[in-house]
Image 1 (tube, rainbow, N blue to C red):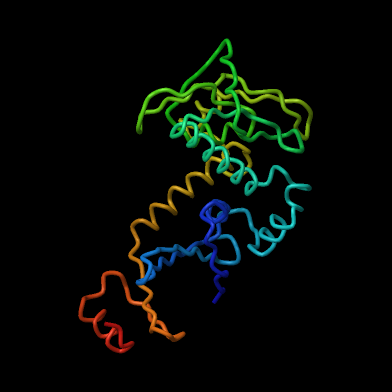
Image 2 (image 1 turned 180 degrees about the vertical axis):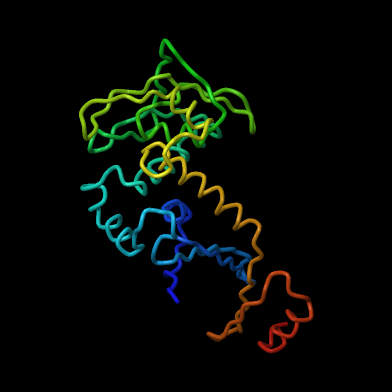
Length: 251
């Protein structure tokens, strides 16, 4: 039987691994003393059937060493991480009023948000309520120029065509209107498209957060002045909790 990876506690990188097709299981633990809850994500070491074949150790090593950024800047994991960054920036804009402006990455092929004056409106603008789509579009040169609405009814205004960037085959700019149309129609390539790589990672993030929220945590109970500890399921009966505490001589 294939082993599971060491625990990963960074939800963003975990979502990227899940989007690449690595099967995931989740463990959630709550410290009885502090009340702090931590979610851990464990992954199979190879992608599931139907996904591009890859080994988790190879992906992690290439990402952490910087080889992936230098040699394969289009890698879906990097597109996912850029989209995560851009999502966080858009959330800051919505919640704190911090406008964001796109800057190119070192390769001049992609873009990420930095705090700054928002881009001016273009002649042809479109709008969408899909913040994940906007975060993925921002990685490929399509900025949000303004946001209106409130709560869960925000509208994001983006230009129909993106900024000029330098790709592997020369200069390009993205047709955002066409991408959003194809996204709604479900006709975009799941694995090869830069936009979909970012979008799928954000979807995986939402799925993981939903799974974490729905899962019961195990409660960590420590014996005072000792390394001994026990894990009891969050929904365990009071009788079981009492037995563990009596065993550890906890009042």
